[in-house]
Image 1 (cartoon, one colour):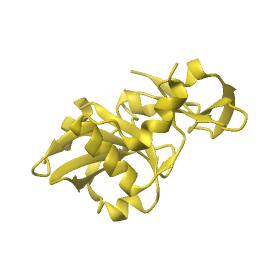
Image 2 (cartoon, one colour):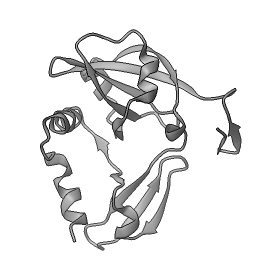
Image 3 (cartoon, helix red, strand yellow):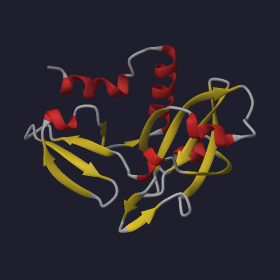
Image 4 (spheres, helix red, strand yellow):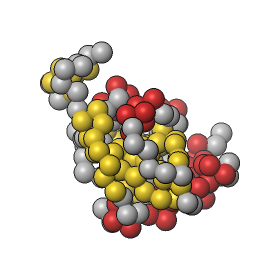
Length: 165
């Protein structure tokens, strides 16, 4: 696997290693990995356990719930515990694109977390992207709980309305 990122060719010999954190949600340990392209974006794994896992390399094969930017207070409030480092998966090397919607002009934009650029877009291109937002602690917990309980998350309601046809 080869990926070019910021003019650097990444392959198996120079992959990026970032911190893995655990936190408790509804009595289960949950896991998140810090992304490398900014200080507040994390991938939240679709995995929970009653005990902290010892071999967190298994997270390399676990699906993710979402990748979002979180407020700087969230790791402290969630009592994030660093449990180690893990090489970023291939699908984490390039940051996901995020969308933004201007309620006044009704225009869509795409935000690129890698270079901070914002480009005009349209509804079709933005559908399926995460909203460019910084999530607070209660919003992240609600989203995780709602996902596991099969409920629609109240914090995603506006997104659903924007993209309804």
